[in-house]
Structure formats: C-alpha cells, structure tokens
Image 1 (cartoon, rainbow over the protein chains, first blue to last red):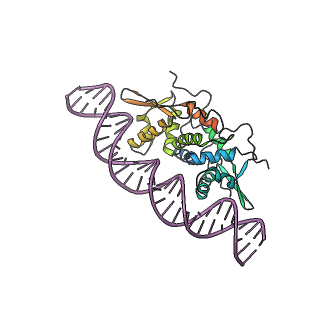
Image 2: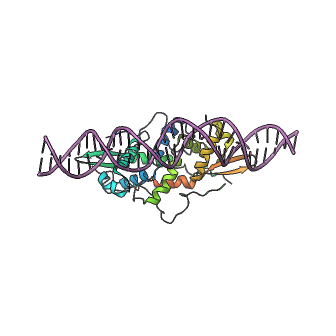
Image 3: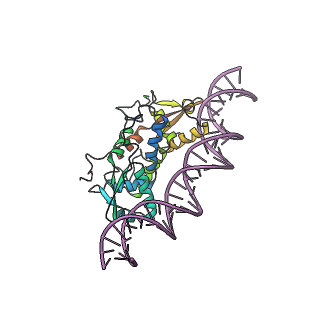
Length: 124
Length: 124
DNA sequence: AGCTTGCATCGACAGACATCGATACAAGGG
DNA sequence: CCCTTGTATCGATGTCTGTCGATGCAAGCT
C-alpha cells in the first residue's frame, strides 16, 4: 500500500525551496500541480485534516466515512487520490485500513510556499 | 482589478494555523480547496512562479504569454483564476497589465501546511 | 464452508474545466 | 479619427472529475 510521493521524493531536477524565488520549469510545475490538484477538493482537504489531526497519527476508514454525506466508494476514491499524491499512506490491519499523514510531503509544500526573508513586495 | 482573497482575508470561522492540527469544518475546507484548486494546474503553478520570482515584484502579461505554448486567451484565463483565488493581483498601466504576487495568501497557505512542532508520527 | 463486515474497483453519467478562434474593449500613435 | 497593439471576454468543444450503485475482494466469525 505504499506508493511513493513525487514531491516528497528527492528529485534530480528539483531540489530547492520556494516556488516564489526561482521560476519553475515545466516538469517541476507539473509535479507540484499534481499535489495541489489533490488538495483542490473540499472533501479531500477535510479528509487530510481529519487524518493529520488524529491523535495517534492514524485513523480508520470506518471513522472517516461517517463524517461525510457521501457514499463509501466516493470516500475511497478521494483517499486514493490523496495517496497517489503522496499526501497520505495506508496500512491494512485485520479487517480495517488505517490512513496516516506523510509529513514529508506537506513539509515540502509548506517550504515551497514560503518566501525567502522579505520577498520584494513591488517596493512602492 | 482588486478582488479580495477568501484566504488572505481574516475570516470569522477560521483564524488559525495548521490544517494538520485541528479538523477543518466544511466551510473552511471549501475555502481552502478553492485556493489549492487554483494551484492544481501546471500552467498556473508556473505562472505564479514566474510572477513571484520576478525582480521588482511585477511582470507584464506580455512577458508571460510567450513563455507558454498556449494561446493568449488561455493565459488570460489562467491569470483570472489565480486572481480570483487571491494569489495574484493586477494593475493596468497604459496599454499593459502588470501582475504581482499577493504574499499574504501564499504565507497563509504555508502556515496552514506547517505542522506544529513534531506532529505525532504514529509513534511506532 | 458460509455469512458478515470493511474497503476497493468498475461502469455510467452529469457537471466542470482547459483550450481554442473570434471578437470586444482599452490605450496610445499616426 | 482610424489603425495598431495589448488584454479580456465569449462560445464551442473535447476531456477530465466527482458521484453513484453494483460488484469484487479480504478478513474474521460461527
């Protein structure tokens, strides 16, 4: 159940912090956009939030599904997209499947969105 | 030309940092997802990167368009979405329109994705 | 083995989105 | 004034995506 994240993974072309500092090339932009796209849905944002904020670091799908007015297949679909984006990971234990955050990925996103000390603000 | 960002704006229901700390409610998730969705396209990520990394803080559309193999209306469309998400702002000066980053919005995103000192990592 | 419960996958469908060419609008120059 | 150049909007079109019910698969129980 362990897909590896395209963003958390250290990559040849992209090593570095901020999107706001240096223009990204097409490949870097495409990989980043995949992760942002995974976060571009209210259900998935809330899923990630529920998973990440869970004491103990994991949560069972059976505790996730009832938090939404959506069918179980739909929740499963959203979890799959989050997993493919490298934002979460899953593990089966017995009958249940547990999801947990992949903090490396959110860390990387946060770094990418952080501007280097006092980004030039069009200095008026 | 100044739409205001739903995320940079201080809001009644949401005041606080990390998505990773406390479960978001539906409204908070929906607003956040709008911004992430705006970043969920390779062209827009690269546009934002080109705009933000520009020395002087602004860039003319006429310098943006030739950086892509896309029609001018398509670029204009993507810029509009970034603007509506509160990620960039624009100003017309003479014939040209200049875009600049709205750093409050990216700052807020970065904060939201930052975990409070040592998020419980499923402590194995 | 059969039953039950938890979760994932499949196929279908409606709505959303990226893209284009054509066109409209804004501003400056002849 | 018209013409040109820069940018936004419009309408059409093909593709992608969120959602569902039905079904399949995994694991434990009896």
